[in-house]
Length: 112
Figure (cartoon, rainbow, N blue to C red):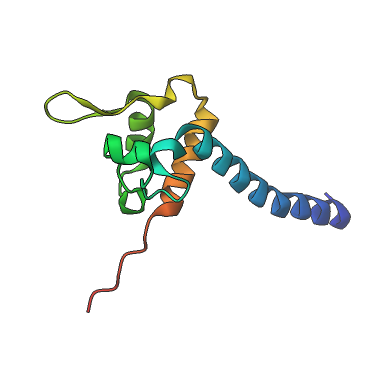
């Protein structure tokens, strides 16, 4: 690859990150925001009704987030607290939601 091709490739790569983030946000908005809100705080009427979790407090690993998206989650009594929203989602869409969920996480506060 010559220098010009490398520069063009680098430019295209740098432009794809914001597009990817915008696509991720659109997927989250479509599947998750009704309960978790656009900011992940779950302060929506539906989120309050379903007792949705504030995603800023999420600490689940990627496979667990994906499982929860696909299968939903139950409390110990077997009652569904999160429906399986991922049944109609592609793997790429699930990965997009995982990236958004992780972007809401609050950095750990330093201990003194």
